[in-house]
Length: 104
Image 1: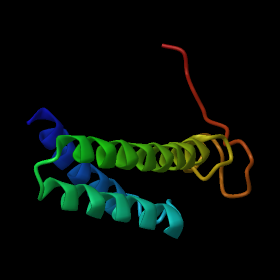
Image 2: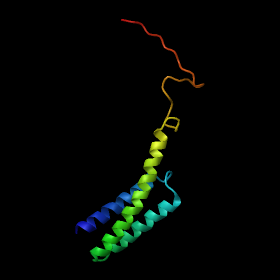
Image 3: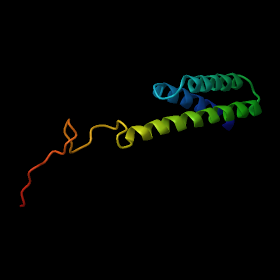
Image 4: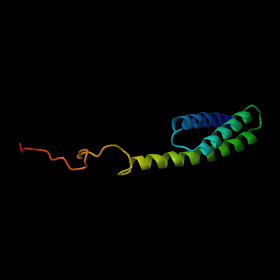
């Protein structure tokens, strides 16, 4: 029963991850995950826990690859110069903006 619950949960998580990160992952990765989800769902129609476990392992492997891609894309976006947003203290030309201060 636990294997079935894990399979159902991972299938849901996989579909959500693909939908949430569609712009980051490749078409091959999307297909790999959606095919693995379909195989898990098909195996859940039967009663063979060993087959469910095998399909669960295949989906887990596909999800690890997608997770690595998503993580890499997030790291690249947060890296300096990686498009992580405007740098504080710089104006449009990239020059430092001077500020005034006074001692209290």
